[in-house]
Length: 156
Image 1 (cartoon, rainbow, N blue to C red):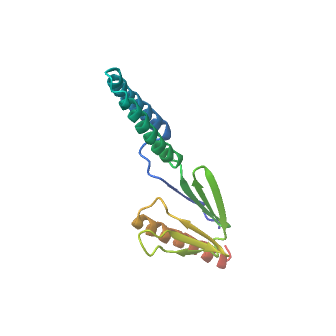
Image 2: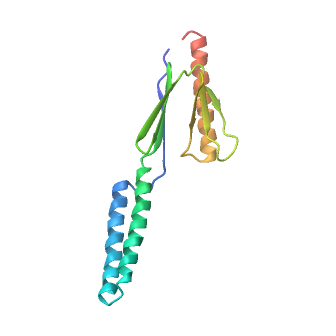
Image 3: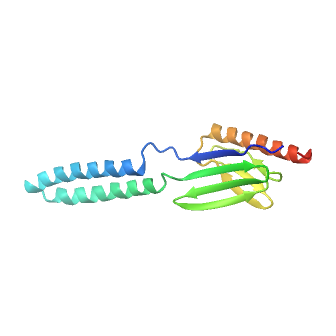
């Protein structure tokens, strides 16, 4: 009997999309430059320079935030493959593990991630989860992998 495929998608908790962020940045720039122009017209031209410097720094910070807004981890499990896909800054890395031989290493500390190891391939997942959610996912993965191993051992 084949197992129904399981999927986990772990993503960053971003409260604002990159497009919304661009609109917020445009509004900030407009307000900052309006104030700077007001003072520049009154003779305080250095305020315009500070506004340009400030908006450049804010723009750089927003750019770095937006680059990582779509980072995620996708774990797909079926009878013959445990596929782990890590997406960071639009760079995709995929790992195919044998679910019958995959071991789950539980995190021992707050900062430690879930380790998945099979036939010399090691992958860490859970970057975007809290400590207790990480432990919960590790237990769930271990349970699902044990079920696959049991079914293959029994000849299903």
